[in-house]
Length: 551
Image (cartoon, rainbow, N blue to C red):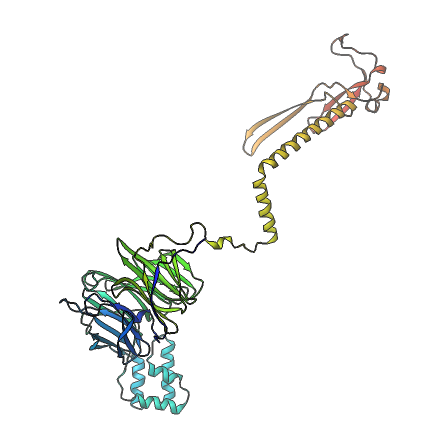
C-alpha cells in the first residue's frame, strides 16, 4: 500500500538558529498592521528575535529570562499596531513597534502575621536565631507558605551563614516579591483578531490577575490553591469569559465570570500543556497520554502516545468552514495532527519539536513554526487543498489488533475447541444423530434378544395411583400399587418340574373364578414350557411378595 500524501509543505529550515524557546514564547503577529505577519520568539538567552520570511530582521535584549510572550491591542485607531508583552521575572515588558513602551510589575505578597513577627523581632534583635528557626519550621509545617528568605534561613545549618542572611534582609520590607509563571490574552468586548484585549497573568503565589487594556492596572484578582503554570482563555471580558488554569499540584481549576467554580479536574500525572478546543479541554500529561475533558469536568477520551509529549498547539483554520484540530509534538520526532480523537496525519522531523505555533506567516494563512530541541527553526505550510476531516490511515480496526496476545495454554485450548465446534457444527450434529440411532438400534436388538432367551417375565405389569389430601405443609399422600395379571414366568426349561422359581415357591391349587376356556387351555403342566405366578404387594410397606403356582 502506497504511503499517504502529507498535507504539509516544507517552507524553510534554519539549523543554526540557536533558539531556546517553548510554545508560550512563540507568536505570529502583524507588527505593522499591513497584513505581513512576522515570527516573534522570546529566546531563553534573553533575546527578542523577529523573523520575516527567511531572515532575522530584528533582535532586542531582554532584562530577564522570559517565561511568556503575548500580543495585545490597546487602541482602536487605524492602522491598529499591536503591543508585544514579554513576561520575565516579576515584570511585564511592553513593546510598541519593537521599542520599549511600558513596564508593569506584579505587586508583592505580604507575609503571614507569624512570619512577619519573627522577622520583626530578628530585625530588633529581640529573638535568637535558634528560636526564630523553630518558629518558622512550625509555621511551615502548619501549611502556611513562607517567603524565600525564611526558606533560606531554615535550610542553612551554619550559624554564621544564618546570621549573614539576617543581616542581608535587615531593614527590608516584610513582603515577598512573586514572579510570573504564565500569561495569556483575553478579548475585551469583540471577538476579532485586532480587537481590544487584556492580559491574564498567573503568578508563583497562586494569584491570577486580569489587567486593563493599557496593562497598568489590575482589574480582577483570583486566588487559587496552587501555582498556575498553564492558562487557556476564552470569551469576552465584558460579556462572559472562562479561564482554565492547570496548576502545579496536578489539578485543573476554572474561573468563570469573576468566580472560581467548584469544578476541579484531578490529573493522574503532571500536566505538560493546556489548550481549549470549543467545549473541550485538552491536557497532555507526563504519562505519555493526552486527556480530553468537557468544560464541566467529565472526561471524554484519552489518546495514548508512543513517546512523551513535548508540546501541543491548536490548529484553527477558517476557509470554507471553521476547522479546529490538535497538534501534538512528541520527543521521538513526530508531530501528530488529530481531528477530535482521529489521527489525520503524522509529520516526522529530525529535531524533536519543543515549541510550535500555528497561524498566518507572511502572506500565507496556514503556517506552522517549530523550534527544535537543539535550536533548529523549521517552517511548514499547510496545503490549501488539505482535507482535515478524513484520516489517511486505512479504515477498520487499529493495527494493534493483529498483534497476538500471550494466552495461557488452557485458555488457548478452550478457544481452539470453541472455534472448532463453531466451524464444524453441522458435521458434529450429523455424527451425534448417527450415533444416537445406532444406540437405539443396539438397545432394541438387546431387548429382543433378552425376550427371545426367556430371561425376563413377560406381561407382569403394575398399576400405580396416588391420592393427595390437603395443601401446603399439612397434606397427606396415599399411594396404591396393584398388580396386573401376569402371563407367567418365562423359563427355558421344558417342564414345570425344572422351573427354579416354581419349585422354590410352590402355590397350592385353587379353583378358578370362572370356567376355563377350552380354546385357551393348554396341555398339562408337565408339558408346559412356562408356569404362571402371582405377585402380592403390601400396602403398608413397599415390599412385594412373589409366589409361583402351577395350575
